[in-house]
Length: 435
Ligand code: NAD
Image 1 (cartoon, rainbow, N blue to C red):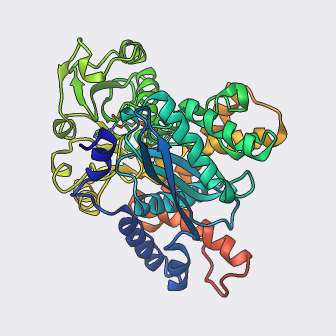
Image 2: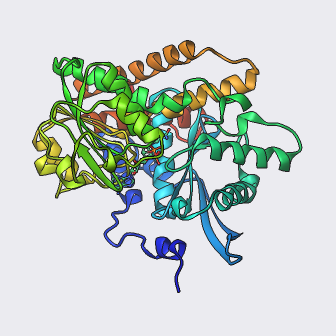
């Protein structure tokens, strides 16, 4: 008989759209639009290194299950590669490759001295005991140790990987190396070298970009309405900050269902409810809501903060929001994007919208190198400066070139990388990228 873990692996979605092809198409289109040499596309289209590892683990029932993990490193010309580790049944090599390319672009837009990396394990962590999860986390790090390190590639959390998981991982790495190397990984618990503000950083950054977009559209945040898909780290923190700005969040869904309240959900109360270990769809003070219905809610702001391929040709036609803030990586398919363009929706693209996480991860790495730690206000202040500057840069390109925000974000990221390629002598005679 198949275990839940086998089923999760066998279940890898049949209707999956490949994000690696999507990011390659977007790169090619942007490089053509910028009038750059196609050699640049050939450099950027693939990660420089991808590792696949097998991770045999003894389960609590005595059986060995051999998990598959990956680590992709896109480009290290601006600094070590950096990016999260995802535990999810849908993880696959093309997904981590795509996510590592997006990480390169994100760091470039925010002017961080880093390249893009990403990793993952094909696993449904909810099917594992805590001991099994810890064993798997430690074994994964052991397998990828030869290619990671504070000057090579610096992992971080992503879907289903918490500070606790990061704590196990760095402990394993330190044991293998024989001394403590806190800058090898970010998103750690604060007590062992994590940064203040890291846990909330991605959501805080999402809220900052939404505020900036609202300014562009002349929309008041106080009293605006929003709907949110995903209530994990990014979704819950985004909800908390938007609620603090007076935004009424009327609908939230996750993998198990959702909730709706026309008058706005009581976010602090909901956060307390979730912290007690309850599932969102069991929250008693709201009506039920499905993922399909979430996209068509009459709200000003829609925030996909879960998985890829949610705004599609099927869901996009119903969208009523004026702003779509892509807190998740790759939540929109090309067809979904086209429909949003026709509807003149202001899209804050993922590579800008969710860059707050890598920004504070960068701050954590800097603090680890100095062995000197900043107060939370200082971290938040620096994050606001970086996110605002990134947004304004992309907005300026959008206005100057009459492009959409996504194309403008790709342009900003590619320009930055091309300058580094030029400075290192990889390419010659590239036309000036200013203007
Ligand atoms: P998480 O594991 O904490 O939460 C994921 C949420 O998505 C959960 O609420 C889950 O129920 C929901 N979800 C999963 N599958 C779903 C489905 N099919 N339909 C609806 N909801 C679904 O993960 P996270 O760290 O919050 O990451 C969410 C997204 O943000 C991912 O795309 C991730 O790559 C991106 N991201 C995360 C960070 C970070 O710092 N954690 C940084 C940048 C980008």
